[in-house]
Amino acid sequence: MLVLLSGCSSSPGDISADTIPPVASVTPDACRLLPADAIAAALTLPSGAELPPPSGTPAPGTPPPQASGAPDPAPPGHYLVTSVGSHSTVGQCTYQSFRGPTLVVSVFPKSTLAALADVTAGLSPVGPAYLGTTGSSGSSGLVAVQDGPAVVGIALNVGGLSNDALARRLALVAAPVTGQPLPVPALSASQGATSAAVPTPPPAAGEQVTGQTAAETVQETVGLRFDPAAITVSSGGVVQWTNAGTAPHNVTFDANPELTSGTMGAGEKYQVKFNRAGQYQYHCTFHPGMDGSVTVS
Image 1 (tube, rainbow, N blue to C red):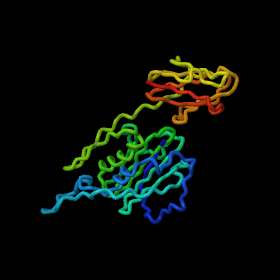
Image 2: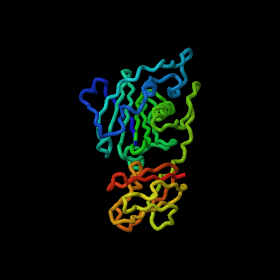
Image 3: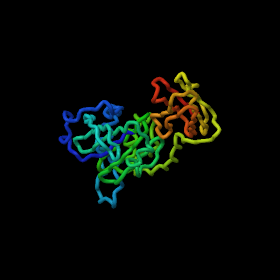
Image 4: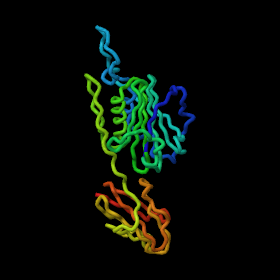
């Protein structure tokens, strides 16, 4: 699942909860992904240590910038279903602070980070996420993460933040979605933090292959089952599915649609080489209850 958060220039009065009803078909609900404390912290006005370095030497006696104080309570989220780029059905929740900062969470159902190139262009891989920031005044940034069979994009607009401080705030709101912190630089109270090295992007989950030696073979049986239903392979291993019956089948990965097969007729084979550790759930869309899983170690 990909969730997008983006900046918005609308004032709170431009958004009416009464005119934007939730649409149940877009899951997960974008307004239920982030805890209130993370939203409030992300929308707090910049503190002194989060501001960009001054462009010149301050005049003698100029006091240092002061912290903005405790966060205001998290504003209510306003929900709508809209289009983003080439994606026509995106669940979006907007949090607008009365002081100006804006946070937008977007859910792209049944999508992957690889399929959202038009939205994630310019972002850099940071751990399990893709993140980017622009500008040191009128700061805005975006973090995108896979969340099961959806992508979540989180966009934040807080004027005056340094890029490092903005990246840290984006990491804060992404953590509840990723389940782990992102490797962004720690805040230095005395000076701007140096940028962390961008890690090597993780390998793709896998790829469709043909004619390779299979580490594991799964039969699509006449009893409308995958046999065996659960298998384990090492990273780099190839799994082969064979239609051992006469009914048509397919191998459908909702969270990784790039690994999904076409319709398999009697005797046909399908292979996937798995390159990244994890558990991959799949099913046959023709036959409810025909499910399987591949664990990659």
